[in-house]
Amino acid sequence: MLKPMVMDKQIEIFKALSDATRLKIVWLLTNIDEKICVSEIVEVLDEHQYNVSRHLKILKKVKLVEEVKEGKWVFYYLTPIQSEFRKLIQDAIKLIPESKMQNEINKCKILLGKRDQ
Image (cartoon, rainbow, N blue to C red):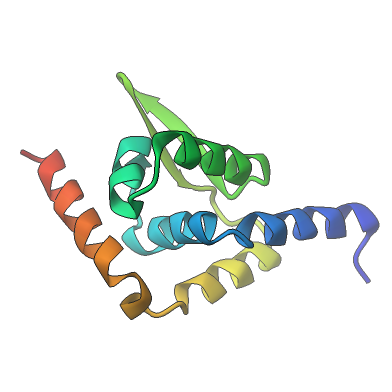
């Protein structure tokens, strides 16, 4: 049986993932396996910058994502998996069909390709 404090953390993760935009952000980070900045997420998901920043703050709070500053850019990436629960959550997110996110995948590939130019 799970201890109450551990269960609270798991509940918070489920709450964080219950929003479609946050789930898409985690799905994107899971499937592109690369750091991505707020402006790239804004463009890929066609969301307002304020909303993306707010969603990232929630995902950071439950330790699903972390950030790293590189020059003037702040990049977000998935927090390394350190528990069986997180591994199962990540595996479940990977099972969301790419066909549901094809438009976002195409936009992301184009943006990431522009980084090298």
